Length: 98
Image (tube, rainbow, N blue to C red; front, side):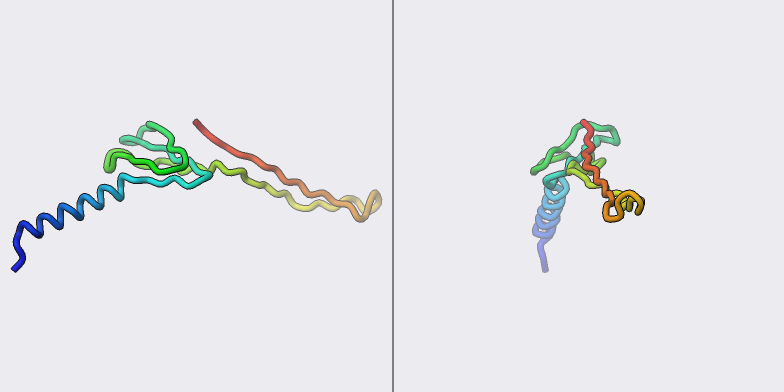
């Protein structure tokens, strides 16, 4: 028969592990996370290891801060002007909020 104190101890340890897992957040390189406390913005987490208050704070938006490439379709030029030429347009952009 298992003692009630041992069961209580294991439940307490399990609860502590769950709270630590919920409290520690890792933000990858190239991303920033917003933290909301009760649904209201409080701060922005930069890349790295962070601790938040579980059950009160939550991650709101995961923002991609890396440069994005926007490619446009290849357009051929008129065969009368230069039949071998064409154009390709690429646009690099980065969006961020602070």
